[in-house]
Image 1 (cartoon, helix red, strand yellow):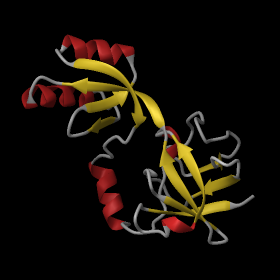
Image 2: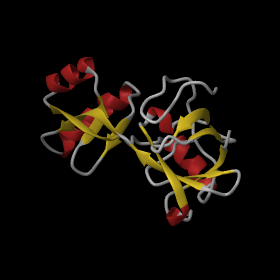
Image 3: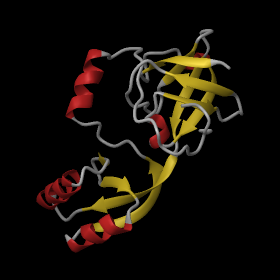
Image 4: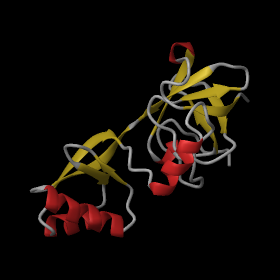
Amino acid sequence: MDRATLAAANGTWPRGDAVATVTLDYEDRCRRRMRLVADDGFAFLLDLAEAGVLADGDGLRLEDGRWIAVRAAPERLTRVDCADPHHRSVIAWHLGNRHLPTEIAAEAIYIRHDHVIEAMLEGLGATVTSVERPFTPESGAYAAHRHAAHSHAHEHAAGEGHAPASGAVEGAA
């Protein structure tokens, strides 16, 4: 089976040379090792040396030099809108206090769908709306340090042990 042993950040690999694209949700972009199936049906083994997070536009280099483009899949998320910057800070604090993966965008905060958390946020005065879009949560202070040390054409992915989602096939560990 073909193995992808190197992940390169968006903009640091020859995107025009991609022979396939693999579309993955956030959980499956946080892997080090697993069997994946590209959008065209090409199966390969993701086999990276260290943990990190694959981002939309990153490239995976196969051992024979071919490249596979990574695409972030749309997911069911909750958009959180706040009344003002102070309210947004309070909401962000509550989400952080619960250690929830959270994407903080210019226009809103995004989290994974969770009816209990949504009820809490509504109780705190936020407006919650179900949306479908790629999820790219904040990586955290410690992850930012790791990525600064390996900024170009580095191996990365993390968090093994989740159930596979779109584009992924269970079978490799």
